Structure formats: structure tokens, C-alpha cells
Length: 626
Image (cartoon, rainbow, N blue to C red; front, side):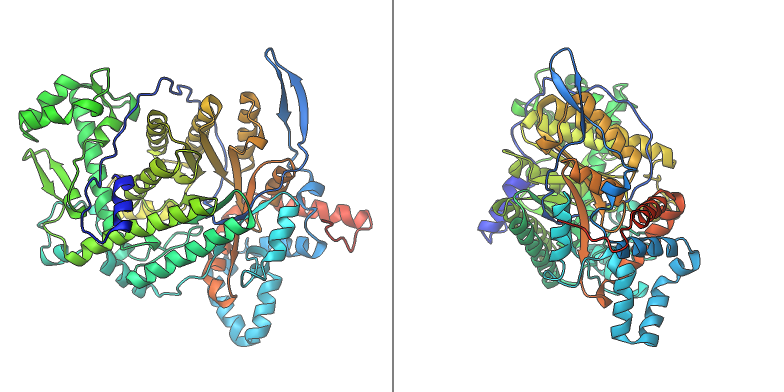
């Protein structure tokens, strides 16, 4: 989708002209591509949602010099077991609170019934006492405060110890499951589908299903937005805009994060995702006909003459049309067509609904995904694009980098394509727009490598946030129940290997031409150590601000603070909001920490170690100095 042509026109004019929605011009061949693809195992981690407001302050590097044949470089070594460095920003009360909360998270009954217990506590103790109790425990551990003013002390303290902040207003609708399902079905089913059940060409994966309408199910580390109307989307855009303003006002190089499902009717994301997937599947079919199946995405290069013959035989277009498709800038000098060339062939359309066409191999025709779209549906699609454009421009004006969060696989192809188009516009001078890649997906490496290759050819800056993923249980259950291939890697170790494979690929790109940035959004110590090792090997300095790290507030301080004090750009995800209104967020944190704390005793043992060290040294009333 040619975001760079569609969205500016939409913002400047109220015209319905949505030409060039799908094709961006200007293809360039890369001269160098990364070939190294080692896979290294890692550990456990959850997705981080960002809206950064404070840049990490650089401290002295913990370094050890070594000589190389070419020049003297610096080897970065950080001791994540140094509790004095890890917890020097915490007083003893905060250490005791962390120990209490993490211990409570290991009790299944307390975690499973956490929301009911919080509601009961509110009734028993009353509102004021309940809020004090929460601020002494879960709220105090995972939430920074109730509003912008109350969170400032924490932000400034973390900044003083080298750790930036990721600000997020974590208030959520407290919907029942039935309410969530109704909202989702209303927002994802078009009028055409309601009128003509079974007549369209839709796949089960890309259609709404009531039993999975509540997208909060099985998700513990990502916020969920449900579409109500266009006014609510405007309000959510304003929340993101305020976040961007706060980021720009507090740092020179801040981050902010957005979710596409907050910005418009998800029906469009479902439909456009299906179109993109079917066109890619058609490419794979043609590659198989040329004996090139089973290769990595970018290794599949179709011979042009064979491709023309195949398309003619399938009847997808007449001979002259097919010939015109592969002329000029769309044709590489090698006489072959790869996936990136193929993606550029989706024709310009006069409206968004006309974009949503798919190749039907059986009939040899390009067919509309749906028989018709209402005028209002067309407007809703345009408004989503307009809101994305407003946010991207606002980020540029405020000197803020914008991260687009990943979501469910049935939305993700469209989300990634829209993000890619923003990158093509705004990442010309430096990386402003970042895409999120969930490495528990089987296709994660293909997605990273294809997008990065496009950035090489067109000369813009690639920006990526790597996470392991937030929707595994929901995705697997939906695939099994509805009947399509499970998109998730088969086991935990396969996900670890995929994460490290993607990470190394991006680090190699940074090492090659410095036109890429990556955020390692991970709570896993092995993954962080792997990153540092690769940076040492490649001579990547933390002061270049090419590699970032991200963790959640209240978790993994033994990773965040040593990194920050060693000069790395590291950020804490800092939620805030009134106690009563962030209970859904706190509920998820409890669920997430059950698995995290049961899987590792390390953080609790380090907390105990530091507390004992202080007591033995007479630091009973220890207070951070900054």
C-alpha cells in the first residue's frame, strides 16, 4: 500500500481519490545482503509496549580494552549479578515490596482469583484503604502513579540512574466477555458479509469468530482495544498524541508506541491482511512451479519469461497486460522477479475497496474479496490511514520515534504493511518509525529479512523492535478450533532460536552500514548477554544509539539498571493511571509474573542478597543518592 501517496492526499483534501494506495515507486537493488544465519538459544520474555518519555542517561562504561589487528576496540562486560549496581536506585522498603509481590505471584490461587480478590478487598476495606494497600503492593510495584505529575519523581530517579521511561496511560475498559464479543463482531463483519453469508471469498482465519471475539483471552502482556465508533478512535489518537508530546518534552530522542486497532475499524485490517497473504501465496505457487519452493523468502527469484507464460496460462491477465506489468522500474536487471518486486505489482486503485482484490487460480480472474463496501466503510478505512499519518507527522515534529506494536496474526500483515509505508516516508534521514516483530512466529525471519532488504534497495533507515510475542495461547487455540495452520513455532526453544536469528540479522545490518536500529525488548538475561557478545564482536558501541533495550517497570531491574549505568540506551515501560482504572493491567501483570517468577528464582535471590548486604553493612535506612 502506498501510504506515502495515499495518506498525505487524504489529509490535504476531503476528496475520495485514493489512488496509488498499493504501489510505491523507486526500486533499487542492494549490492550487499547478509548471509550469516546462526541460531542461538535464549530464554523467556514477554512483549513490551512503549511510549517513551525519557532518554537514558549515559554513565561510565564498564569496559576492558583489547587489541585487534586493525584498531583498538572496547569490549563491554556487565555483571548482572552485581546487586549493588542493580538496586542502588531502590530503598529497602522498595526491595521488600518487590520480594513480597514476586512471592505472591507464585501462588496459583491468588493469581487466578486476583481480580476477584481485589474487588473483595475494596468492599471490605473501603476505597481509601484499598488504594493505600494497592500502592504498598502490586500498584506500587508495576504502576508509576495516577497522573503525569505524580509519576515525575520516579521518571527523574530512573533517569538519574541511566534508565529512560516508556510512558503509557494504562486505563482500560472493564468489559464483560459478552460485551467484548459483541463489539468485536460488530466491528469486524462488514455489511456485505451480513447480507451474503457464504458468497464471498473469505478465509476462516481472516473472518471474525464470536468464540474468539474477546481478544483479551490468553493475553497477559499487551493492551487490547475494541472498536466502538469513530469518535472513540479520535479520542484514542489524542491519547497517543499526548504521549508523543510528553516524550518530546522530556527527552531529545524519545519513543512512543501506538496500536493500529486503536485507530480504526478492525474490519479493514482483517480484509487487507487476507489480500496481502493471498497475493504472497500466489507468488509461492508460481515459485513452486519453477522448482523454487522451500527457500527463504528472498531466495525465491522467478524467471521472468516462465512467469509471464504461467500467468498467461492461468488467465490472470491478457498478454499485453502481463507484459506491461514487468517493464521499467518494476523489473530488476537480472531478468528475475523476487517477492519485493512482486509486492509492487498490485495495481493502483481508485478506492480502498477496489484494492481488496485477490487472484483466483481456479478461474484465472482477479476477484473482489467482498462483493461491495458501503460508503461509510470506505470512509472508516480512510480515517484509519489519516490517524496514522497524523501520529507519524506529530512524532517527527516532536523529535520522537514511533513504535507500532504487533498484534494478532490475522491483523498483522496489514499492520506491518502500513508500518512499512510509514517507514518509506519518514525514515529517509534517520529511523523514526519502528515495526515490531514477534519472534514466536514461524515466518518472523522471513518478515524481518524481506522488510530489511526493501530498506536497503530504497535507501531508508530500518527500525525494529524484537519481542518473543504476546498472543501465543490465543493464537494456538484459535488455529486449532477454526482449522488453519498454527502460526507459532513448535516449541519454546524454537522461539528462542528464532529470536536470536532475527536479532543477529539486524545487528549484522547495523554493522554493515549503520542504517538500522533495534530494540531488544526482552527480560531474558541470556538474550541480553548474546546481544552484548555480538556487539563486542562487531565493534558496536552503546554510544552510537543503534541498539536499545526494554523491560517492564518493576521487573528485571538487575538487567535494566546495570545496562543504563554502563551507557546503553535502556528503557522501562512505565504505566500510570488511577488505581481503580488500572486493575485490568495489574491483573495481567500478576498472571505474567506467575510464569516468570516460577520459571526463575534469580530475581528474588538477588533481591535477598542485596537486602542482606545492606543490613550487614549497617544500611538499614538506605536511601538512593542522585
